[in-house]
Image 1 (cartoon, rainbow, N blue to C red):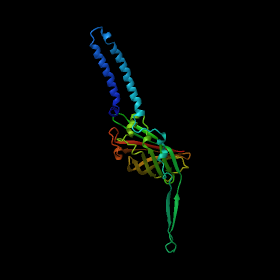
Image 2: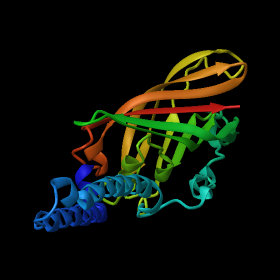
Image 3: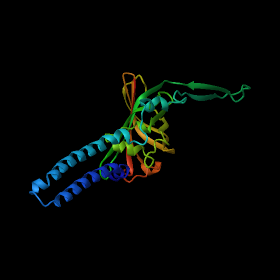
Image 4: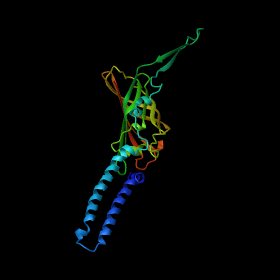
Length: 277
């Protein structure tokens, strides 16, 4: 990260170099004087030193303040760009059809009766689900959370979908957040979304009418940086007072999704949570 700053903001170091070069020049000129005491000859040198310290501290302060606001390559200037509405599409409200065939008796002339039953259930949708990832890095741990993730869940079909914007992940360190969105990391300008579409295997005793914690598995395609891989994870459905929440903690390998950064551990821990009111 330090080398990235040096590469992107050489101006700070150039300014500091000019300031202290001026101090050295004043000191050199004063040493050429033959008359007067040391203090008399170097009065201007001392003033220049004090002024240089003030200017250097100001330079560093501007550098630190300038980074988060003006030096982002692709700053998000409109808060609506992080809205989960951008992640929604026509597939959020789903239904499932089950075909039931009733065979006629062997000696009967009647044809087989085929009935199509449309299972709709109820589709719960939230725009405030969260995806958190954690990685232990060589210098410091890397952790970020996106709390504006769109999620849908159907309590009959088990269909589940998560979609989040890459730029929605928030870091405590703004420099790390900038680096996260760069083209050499997540390249959020080219790959703005991450998504998962799967089907939860609902247990036989699952009911929205019955409070409890239901251990489930879900399997489906996970897409990150335009790479899609079938992923199977376990999780928990929590029903409390006819309200549903979902949670799952699992790991993925960054190389599987073209995240080739040595600063990040090979495995990323992902925590997904959604609460439907």
